[in-house]
Image (cartoon, rainbow, N blue to C red; front, side, top):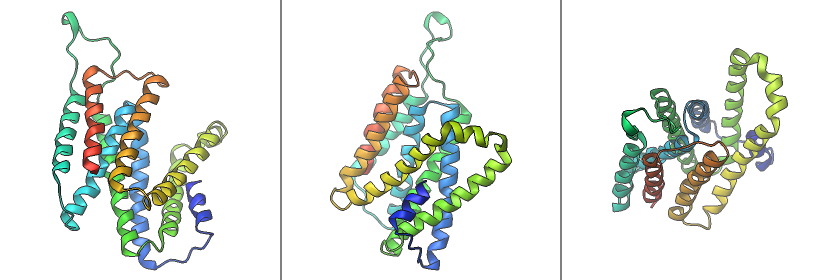
Length: 252
């Protein structure tokens, strides 16, 4: 659905420079991994903290810009990194059991499996945020829609192959039960990318990206708390808040 969204946006005009292809393949590989491991992280751990962890992926394009593009650093960057480190500490702290017994409060547990899945999702999501702007800058935005069409078509093909090996028996039941959600997710993916491109022309990036990142985490936290009944400990909630603040500073 996301691929069709960008195909329609491009007017089904698929002319492109062959030099775009390596970027599209790299983006597709990163996108596949980010999608798969992000899903695995949600399945094995808290949705709210998974959303926060994947939002830390902005560190990758940030450091890429500093190291390779010689982007200037600021005090805000170092404050954001400090808050991020504090956030990670609080998220992994455990509340002490009361009266010498193990806590049965139902607080979500952080496992090594979740941490690995979230880390891979973080790195590959960061790779997406690095590759796409790089190709857009190199080709002066001439092939942005075609780039997304090619990338998402590759992602679709890879996912189909995985389905044939892993979930062949569940295809029809999954489509019947989840088709509306799948279409909605694809449309949302296309719309958010389009809105970011449009908004970037009128809104300062230092305002837009903190709003998107922090706002998305807050919304996910609200949904995870009230819809999925996830219960974070006090220390994890402190870590979540510190993480949101760190993302705002890292974007300044």
